Amino acid sequence: MLKKNKKAAHHSISSSDHQKLLNQNSIFAVKEAYNSIRTNLLFTQQGEKCPIFVVTSPTANNGKTINSANLAINFAQMGKKTLVIDADMRNPSLHKLFSLSSRNGLSEILAGLTDNITVTKTDIENLSILTSGKIPPNPTELLSSPRMDKLLDFVKEHYDCVFIDTPPINIVTDATVFAQKATGYILIVKTDTTNIPELKTSVTTLQTINANILGFIINDTNSEKKKYYSYYRKYSRSYSYNYKYTYGSDKR
Image (tube, rainbow, N blue to C red):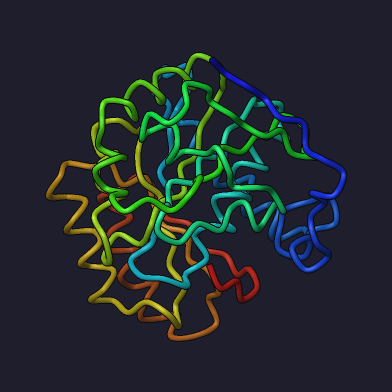
């Protein structure tokens, strides 16, 4: 059963988070960057009614969660009924970004503690969140369970697109379980946080499991950018596209 919560009044987004989340006051270059990414991602649907995009990063502190949120916001702004799933059950933060309760979320559904799929509508039209729930002892096992497959089948019938925020792929294997279930992967990379060998490890991991790498988002391009761009250009010939833009100094 799909249960939708209306966002309570005290769940307003903080002023600091407003500076990170995409909105009508975001600078033009940032909005256009997300519009460009959205256009490219729409070409990857290949007739899918509801594409599923997995967002991950090589290591921590690359900005994957804020990018998961902003990509979803961008799709919602064009009228797509959009769901973001917080599958980073080891270090969940999507609920904090939107000031939501994380109770009765993904972990409870996958552990069989509830039959209700409780999503929360945000203040942003067409955008809903499925929070992580209580931190479980066995995230990888839960994410690779038949219940996760059933959940994805279910949400695909109710939404136009789904974004899944997952843990860093070089740290734990959680993100890899979606390789055969998702439209593809988007790698978030912050140039002063992740080095080239770490990125190569991520790419190799995804290639090994035959995952579809849709592209990169380079987050905060101020440092060592020549070296990084050279590497991304090399891979842009193999993958559909890569994305380059500068956006703040987000910690997630």
